[in-house]
Length: 288
Image 1 (cartoon, one colour):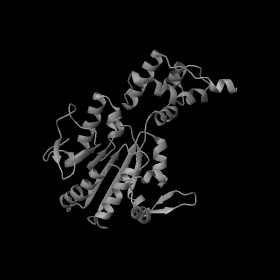
Image 2 (cartoon, rainbow, N blue to C red):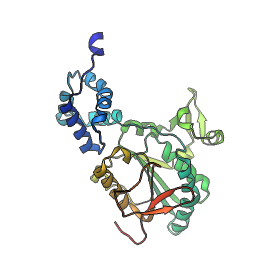
Image 3 (cartoon, helix red, strand yellow):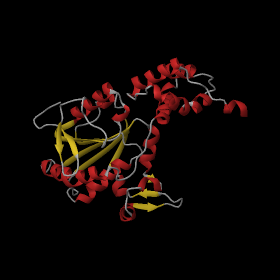
Image 4 (cartoon, rainbow, N blue to C red):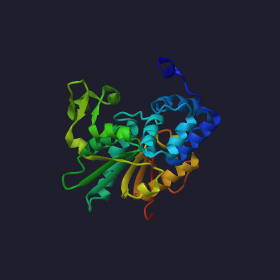
């Protein structure tokens, strides 16, 4: 048994092609030839869990087994990277707090509602950061309805996000004053988020390639999707961005990661220069 557990199962070229195509069709995640070793390494334990001696058998399980959807979720958890932390990409967050939120507060002063979507929210640090910034802005009193939603394709990270208990690694860009103000230290040395912030955010499982599920998302004033579309090929990027465009109100903002852009993807958004960063805005007077 010790020998068997140490045996590495090889992912052949054909098996890699089949699995990569399957993952792409389901989630839009693109794995090129250079990612073969990554898939082979990360999925070893799944094969051993099911006592499979080849990736082809695992592929057939994903296609036909009655529990294939549960296994598919486990696989996506394993092959995706979910690196995040509070106050990530501070320049953009400063622009969000100092320029975008005041504009939205004025724009929506009549209906007194604000809806923000963190797409690809991972373990929740990003949407909770947005909630903190909204709270600290002083722009939205109790008469406002502020909805912040976080979605991710990984059920595992959403479970962590809903607990709102974080380890020290989540605070690499957070000052001690903010930690003291919004978190309580737990007995095992972790940090539990205050309910006043936690209750501002709601989470849901969502595959950005699933158009039926995307239809359940209501119109948003701001969509933040940072360091997500870098894992998509050009076609999947276009599908996701077009969905974001449809979900934004006219004049709404789309914020991507600092290394991401819409160049060669779409021209429907207007590039807007703020003090510290550039963001994308859905033009006024547009619909759908």
